[in-house]
Length: 186
Length: 321
Image (cartoon, rainbow over all chains, first blue to last red; front, side, top):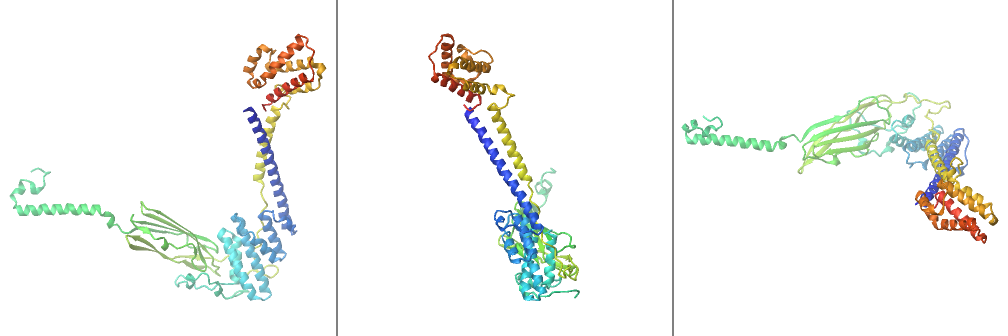
């Protein structure tokens, strides 16, 4: 019994040391990833080899960096990996940033007067913002940008308190929209 | 006349013709029967839906993406059942309205039903605009028959977030809100885990250090440790000193001189040392022969047995045996 107790104390010591090592590594990892986040926020890229084991926050920050550098394809690829995160806050932020990537691309197309190319991008942006708002209805920036996207590509509506909504039975017909890009007062 | 007796059985009634008396009795019994029927079937005379409440929030001041919660409370007869397919399903109601959550709670005993509906609006008005959430009919069934309860459309106003003219940024593009940067990772949980693991390591390590006699403040945990160190420095020629070292260690542990005849009392005081009983018996016999009978024929084997005894006592001392 004394020998068993003695071995148990050794076991507790080894477990404690192992846990201490693991927690120390966790702290080091958090510190390292916070440094990467700061670098990305300052406009400096990080090595792609760092990404596979990195936390979703680092990937999200890199997607922001890529969009700022107008590397839309890479930004979209990075964001698409974050769509199924269990953390709803982070998922909402990813979807919002995805919407921003589509909206920025669409505005670039509009500037170049390629309206046809801009339309599907605007629809994708609206969809991403709606998903972000479904996760957090008080996401003010998502509300603002969704409204902007809907102004750039308005959807026909026949909604009034007195008349029935013709589209009530056909919610999926988004392509019945008429493109319009108001540049000022109507 | 006995006041408790019915009129048609009383002496006064005897003066009334028999036919009339029987007619009066029949009317009384028919009345009683009708009352019993009414009492027994009172549930059947209740309206199918006795209470309908449509609880709605303020009908103004909404913005794009806002959620609107409706609650419908209905009280029906106990035998009525809500047909769940008459409740709007989760999903898109129309192009700008999404029904995110539907919860139905029914209490069959009381006949109460509460329906919670959580809508989300995705409409971008250019100015304050009145919209309406479409009405629907709830259907209840009872024995193959159905009863409908209409839920009215609900009107509310929605406001824009932006002015009509699209705001431009410094580059002349439409102003949009920037990307969200993830917040820095918090290490609170890791620090907590680190301190907990470190405390565990220190506590168990400290206890082991105490058992192994690494703290000079507890000399009684290092009696045989010191003895083993002294023995290792002595040779066969120093056998008498070696025996003295071992005796001193045992005396210190026992807090009084320990002789062979006191060994049973020693084992009662320190039962863990009973494990070394055979070796201790040999030690006392050998010690008597060397110290009092002048025995000289000993060698490395005896020295080794003495060191082995000291090592065993050391293991017992630190708790590993």
